[in-house]
Image (tube, rainbow, N blue to C red; front, side, top):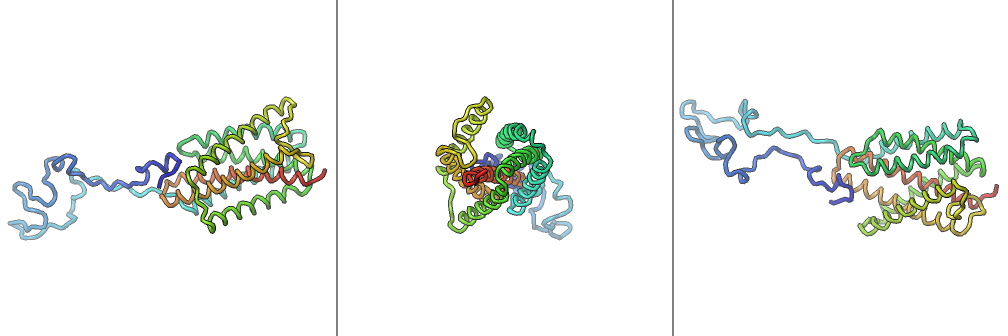
Length: 300
């Protein structure tokens, strides 16, 4: 099984060295020893009785493991499991929820907009840093949880102030959408092809760049009409929201596929952090888009 992840695509990451000696590579046994099954000069063959003692050598005689050419087998490393991914996902999302709740309750209204802007930019940079690392750092993932918790808490408080009750609806809609996507992936046997992965990845990068540009120009008072909230949102906002939700669901399918392939390939246990991180990022994105779509049907 090959994966787009560089760790999973390295075959040596899933091989266990048994310390076997390849005689054909050197043409003779190391340190002048005779090949197995052939008697060395002046010594009896394994399994043959010694002339004087009249007994056979045991297959694992004392001191055998200290002979030259023996390499002890390395202990098996931990592998990625569904339980491990669920546990790490719970840790990341739990930390995010706690920080979001604290922000939602205690953040003053006059700091609401600055907190949203700063945490959105820092969170975006954190996602790029974690995603580009070959081995995911759990500390960086937890730092993302804190930053994104501030963003979600501040954003939710702003929407809740404008449209009371919308946060609970968005949370329920997010988990329902994720559950339906998981059921469809499992029971409809959805398969992620390389073409599907390429299209979704390019489209996701494109819409992320669009969001970033829209955020920058909005700081200068320019409205593009692409990202709006409330019932006054125009057709462009509806189109962007529909595309964003579809891409978030497609990314969820890719997350499920990555977890399934990683478990089947016995990927290193550290990859559980990457899987949990990707799942959390997608869930956060889906929540923000559903929050915005729900605002289209609400009045102040």
